[in-house]
Length: 314
Image (spheres, rainbow, N blue to C red):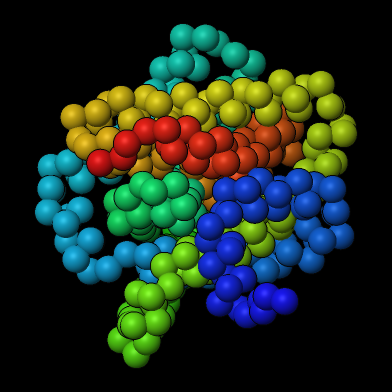
């Protein structure tokens, strides 16, 4: 009989990460009490998957990605400002209902999702590049989000800029220090178990996937037809921005271009959702679109892994 040690469980989680993320969403939606239990653990889970991402990236990999400064700066500018401007242009052109327009712009305004580096590692993309994009945009978000939201969507966001920046810095800094300590004192173990390091991120991400489903059933069952339409739109928007981001940076190698696509389409929706709380009471359609846009983040990686398996990433 096989022995399932914590290490083998983590390695298995690392190998099957995208499928487990998709399963986490289904479990959280089907089992509301479990989602309720996971909800308070999401802050810790963010630290865990950030730690896993740092363990997949070494200093040499960071230096290699940061060496091309012009590409890095262009990528950050696109991720933080280009993506919301594209969304604003589409909303201006298509003129959807006001609530949907605000929701689309808010999703695009959010920085890349904190799990982007962990998902990149699962998909064989550039975890260092995704981590650089996530860290830089997340730390800057408390300062650029409110004015851009007001200018592009007419939305006032309730953000304590200093407190949020400090919280994000604590999570990122704490994960970086913990990863450094593990490499310093258990570097051989880290290097010998790459799938288990990915598995650490997967455990954190599953917890977030389950917790993120808290209350989702209410949103869906209140207006199932409308929710289904917005869910489809959320998938199209996520995938469309990923394709656009990858095409815009096609001059880079395919692996890096697809990584930029990943951070273009997968945004930190929970951050803007929390910040937009005062707005949502008067605009329930905004909250429903934000809720439906969470699903693609956890469900698309399964299809993407299968797609990327047919491509040669260089």
